[in-house]
Amino acid sequence: MSQNTFKKKLKKGSSPKGAKKSIFTLIEEKLNVTGLLGEGIPVKFGPPFFFAAFLAMIYIWSNHRADNMIRKIERMQQEVEDLRADVTTLEAEYMLSSKQSEVAKKIQPLGIYEIDEPPIKIKYKK
Image (cartoon, rainbow, N blue to C red; front, top):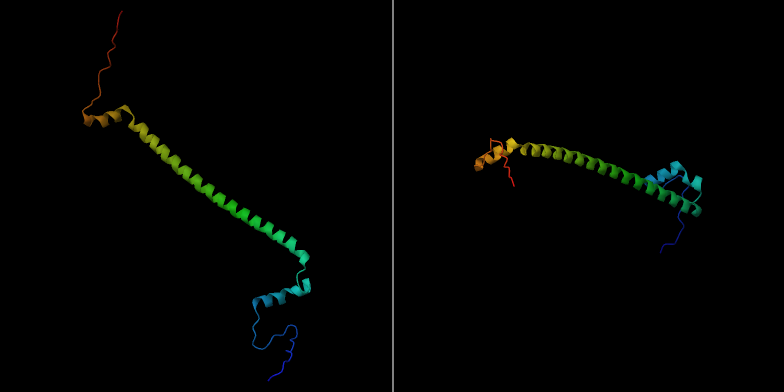
């Protein structure tokens, strides 16, 4: 049977042979977080940090919503312009088709014709 023994402690900055450093280890070494904060982040910094993060999320959400609203307004303005053009075209066609000469052309195949003589006024005496 083998005996329990203590592992050899590594010195700071050294790593076991063949072990690759992760990106988080590299970031921690470059930023020297332990020198700035000690062994961990103090609990007293939690609520202000989360409040600031919450405000940042509200700000990002608000900007995103505003951008979506602007895009929606622009889309609606384009649709209104298209509909306004359609209405103008339809009104012009309606005005043309309701002219007396156009109506006469349309009813001519039905055998109805336009009277050339002016109407006669009938006078009634009592």
